[in-house]
Image 1: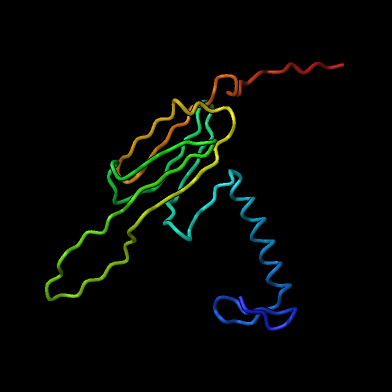
Image 2: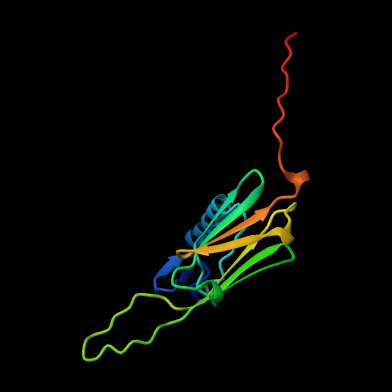
Amino acid sequence: MKHHALDTYTDKNGVCRGMKQHRLEELLSDQLARLFNPWGVEEDQDKFLSPRIEIKDKEKAVVVSAELPGMNAEDIELTCENGVLTITGEKKETQEDCGHGYCFSECSYGVVRRQIPLPDGIETDKITADYEKGILKIVIPKQMEHIQKTKKITVRSK
């Protein structure tokens, strides 16, 4: 980012913009990220491809589903360390000879990685994972004392 004056800057597309507008966009972006990302999931897009995920907080477990198409279960590594679940995998490029025709691909290949901070009160030693049809499903059981039990409270009239 190259600054032209105290109140302007040049964005990544070479467009000169006002710093106040840029700061407002940063603040709005941060607020939206917090609103739509309450789990604090971070994407490390600089080094790795980042699989799309879905997190469901169910009564007895947290269930994470990750889209990992084009991989085999052997290509996926799942670790849990210091309260962070890490999904790593590699989608390998297949080399095909196109002969005299034209080859074109919009597919992405390489290492995928996603880290998900986990809430307190889970049983990391009982995490299970299944991979089927390009979807990795991870079930993270909650400790019994952290499972919310519904208790009916009587309302008295006076």
